Length: 295
Image 1 (cartoon, helix red, strand yellow):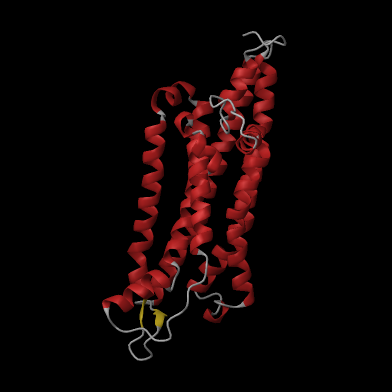
Image 2 (cartoon, rainbow, N blue to C red):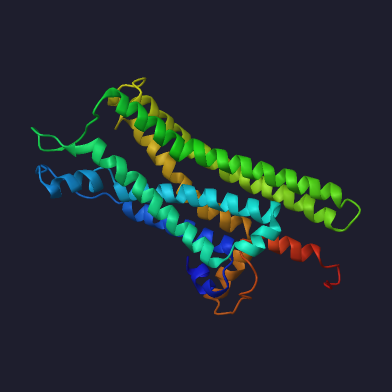
């Protein structure tokens, strides 16, 4: 976040999205900190707000879901940049990306705020927060929705866009086989494939166990006693490793980021015009130069 803040005046779309991803992951870690639990909860507006916001860790799940959809937005942004470069250069700018990130935050907040009052509330007799479904079908609908919303939909979008990118680069490599750009397209294709395969695989491995288990509990395949068990807690912890690994993936794959980070601590001014995370622009620049560095 510090490196991208220093370079904010010249940040490109991918840099802004990666910065937003880092912010969402950072806020996830903040709201992950445990808060003291209330021993009793009054049947008042304040008590209901506690059961809607604090008890289910509302803000934490908003942040982690925003992280998922910013990862998805990065995948779509790279898809447009590679497959439709003219459209990308004409339409995608800093303002559009900032609006997109804001819409992801607002939309995620609205989705969770819509169903939490339906699911959580104050138990009328025991004065504690409890899960309440109007009918068995409510749990099935909620479990199915969250499985699609937090796993199937973003995974499907990421896989489809990245396959499309690789196929597009493959066609370009064949088209320009006799030109110097052939090495660029082959290198770019392999780099995109390796990076996005890593990102998608880690995301699926981290999120699938918890989301599938939550879905099975809601449809009645697993008993409700599974919630809070060691296996359930282990699946939840595994989900948050996705946020832990995001900065490792992106910083390890981009030497420009590591150089920019060193320049901050060494008080040296790095080239602020060099994109940190925009591989498409960097590769096109490299492909247009010969060995002497001339365009």
